[in-house]
Length: 204
Image (cartoon, rainbow, N blue to C red; front, side, top):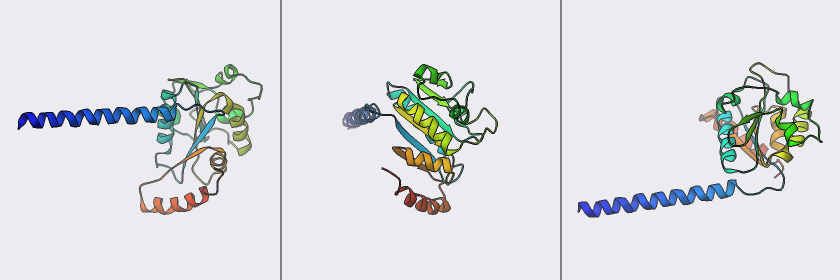
């Protein structure tokens, strides 16, 4: 009986491990798909404390790990966000608001990365502040930065302000994928329904 039980456990563990490897391989293949133009993933929420920045950090590090092309992480919020801390950025230089007034269409990738913070796995960070409340970022500045940078990066993950901020709305409208984080409360679920109804009308 003990021998049969041991063989059953081994088969279970072996099949479980094989299934896990197959699932991981399938996910990696999806993440590594070639893109013709840069793809933007906007992450937002309806209120703070719902894990928005954590999700943005996890998405960006996952894509950077699996993709061969550079990945950009943008903090589209001039408030004192925690994205640089969560990504392990050791220093902060130019912010999203700063770059809006500096970026030019003719810049090369080398020029652009001179304004960014380098992260592991060929990922780059454009923070929203330098450890203090920064200049306000308007929709025109955000669009200028994103239009100029997107061609250099296969995937860009944007950590937006909470809705209904105007820059967050602009980021969601321009993104190819949208992530909405929700507080695990009854009020959070009720508010989310209205936001999802609004998001249904965004370009696909």
